[in-house]
Image (cartoon, rainbow, N blue to C red; front, side, top):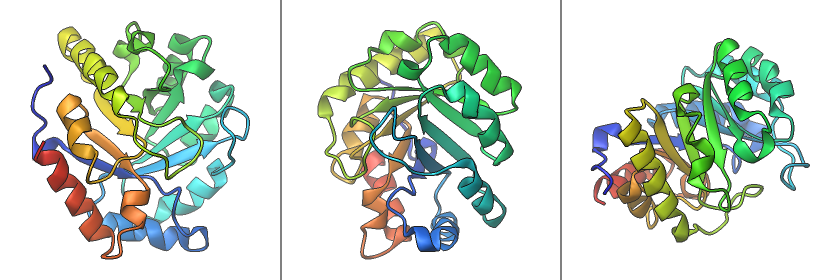
Length: 228
């Protein structure tokens, strides 16, 4: 059974995918002022997933505006070739998909050599066992609770058992690894994800669609996660 996630341990990492791209810098500044813990960049190449989003130059242009850590989630083919560009752009953490890395151990090692922390993301159909032998190289494991490629999708509750499995794998091995969930995270779903063992929550639509603003949205998510 997953250990209780304390409110002080809950990290909210807003995805800027739903942001107004014409005001992207202002949006990121607003997220920092609202108490976000980091900014999540959903990087898509139109090949690994059917969408095209941020390149490293866009991220680099925002880096001087905020002090929050940047995590880039590379939903791309051949992420090892792009990794140096995201290091140069100022990303502290780089997450790659296990499905895109035939030599996952080597790729994670290369990310660390670039001075970034490394993460591994798992698509819904990918088993937890895919990260079993690389946890020593990871700072973070990301369990996708939607199929990657688009924002605004519905949360896949069946992924909670995978979250719990990864949580047990991390705890039983004594690894200092964060467990993140991404996809359909909102006030009605974050509690179940927290109960399953997640401690880092990517939220896009739930943050940007809140008519009361970023402060309210982030506060509501923290409260809902803490009440699981």
